[in-house]
Each structure stands twice: as structure tokens, then as C-alpha cells.
Image (cartoon, rainbow, N blue to C red; front, side, top):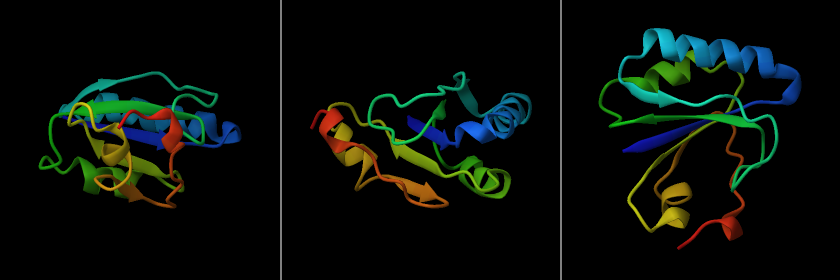
Length: 107
């Protein structure tokens, strides 16, 4: 299982919502897409929306790279119990790497 977090500036919430709708419409390999979170939450350093997908082999990473515009995307595995490693060492970034607030994660 993987999580993808698409980060956006508040002034670009409309662009983020358009991408979210495009994911819902076009990407049947994405298991769940959550609403925009227009504030800081958890380890995230910008407003974002989250999606879950089973694996990276379906072309989702390449598709997101093409469709994300100037938004940054964090993609990380969910290994269970190793959140810090999942969000840092095991993570990949599309666009500018923003990092995460590691102190909010469990080891």
C-alpha cells in the first residue's frame, strides 16, 4: 500500500481540486482520494490532499509527474510501524522536496 500527498498553496486550492477530480475520474488504480485539507495537519508542511493506491507499478507515479503542474507530491509506502522511514528514506518526491515534520511521526 502507498499513500500520495499532493501539496498546494492555499491560493491554488482550485488547481488542487481540479487534479483531485481528475484522479477520481481517470485513475481507477487509486483506491481512495480524500478531500483537500486546507491547513497543516500531521507531518505535512503545506495544505494537501491524500490518495491511497496498492502499488506503483500501474503508472500512477509517471501520471502524477505529468499532471501535477507545479505542485509537489510525496509518495511513500505504508509498511506499518515505521512512519518516519516511510515518510523520509523510503519516500519519493515529485517536484520540490518539502520534507515533513518528523517529530510528529512514530518510529
